[in-house]
Length: 146
Image (tube, rainbow, N blue to C red; front, side, top):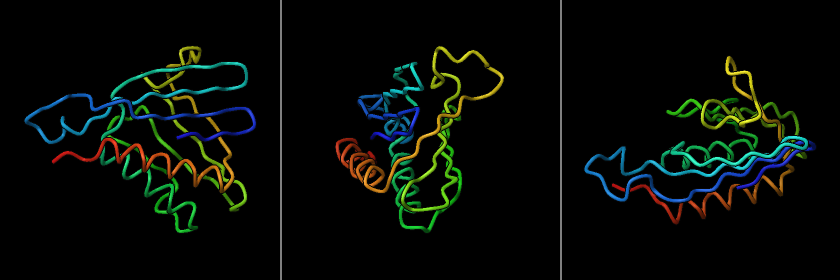
């Protein structure tokens, strides 16, 4: 999934389940996530177990709600507080998203550990729809495991 803006880009890819098998439902559904960010002339890549399968599903629903003008919430947060999304869009031609990157998701060049780094992206409707479709495809490869 890729979202861009005038000075930034954000890519999220599911690499695998964190655990190949576990007796615990929650552990079976943690995902290894790759994040690639660019801000001005700075790039950063990290891999960590940041989201679960059901949180990816929630992110898809949230993005769909923004695209359909029926936003579920202006902010979306997850169990691991190092990643989050916010929407401050006022129009449908171009969306205004903030992506919170903190702790293990924060870029290594960001030095203020007292607060998260917020990456601003402004995808248009076509890009948002592609991001949703891409994330749905990724979740299809790594579905919720019962």
